Amino acid sequence: MESNISRDHIALEAMKIILDKSLKQSIPPVERIKRLFGLEYRIKTFNIHTANNIAKVAYEIADEMIAEREKGGKQ
Image (cartoon, rainbow, N blue to C red; front, top):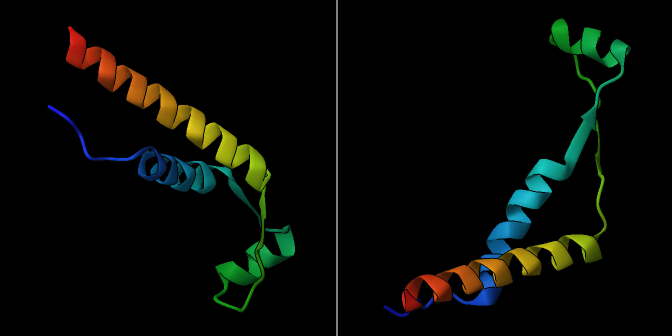
């Protein structure tokens, strides 16, 4: 059975997961205390990966998934 899910779609879904897992938040102790008492506080969010690396890894995942899908159909 042929799947209509494209390489780009698989890579997009992989990128969503990679980005979700790679975002880190830093809350300094003073801001944590503010948060505890319900006051306004600031969170620093940063990404530990570059866009090029994320895209490269996402397409590698997509290629591996497609290869596995094709291998499964031939057995």
